[in-house]
Length: 303
Image (cartoon, rainbow, N blue to C red; front, top):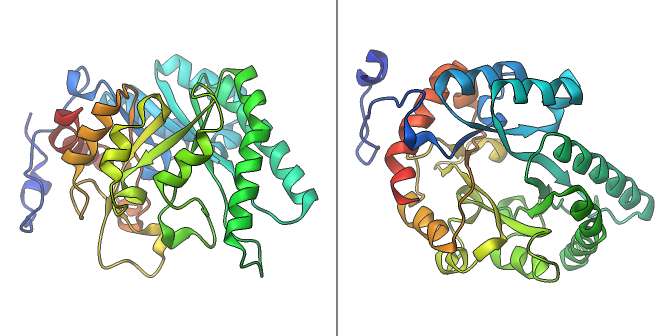
């Protein structure tokens, strides 16, 4: 099978990945590839499930909002009937509020998220810790509250057979989304709890900058709950949240990162997660075909 003519006609900038044939259903190289729903943000759950099946992807990383739109029972049936794995559920967390009532509400919301994760037979609930409350400048206190909130969920997660995956986020997002800014910080929080209950999400977009990160990743062992790939592109767009590029379009060394993940012993799914207005504007089927090509060229050979 050859790549679509429209892509072959594109000018390929120096350093861009070579064009390869789109892998089809049954291609063994796709055995661990998962579509994170935000990569095709214009698709609802039904479309995302159908898109995975059509492209031969065996897994999907679901977000709670699209699940809520169809209802949890319907989502469980939809994914099961399609024969897909749910690689992760996103997201829990956002528990750094300074107000005790707000923290209790966040805890209760995370319990609901754990219930949904268990119902979908997903191995991990991804936790985005949260940023600084309005007017608050004490980031260390916020990190302490995040660690306390994780601890309060451990027994609940274990009772449901779900792991908590702490996602360290690039420092660019420390104020509003993630006060846990490095893999080292996330591992320090996780270390207080059993590895079968609490681990870390390794996301290339968030962690590529961290000094010594490849050695940290390789040494994570069973602490890695999810491996997510997306590229760091420059210049950053006006909305920094939408700055993730397609794998191979930016600065991340996916060969080195993926080799480190392999050396850690991680054997789970690999999610492609991209927040990018141009990617979102493209037809979903084209996006999935592109990410499958980039994955089998730049990531899968190093697993």
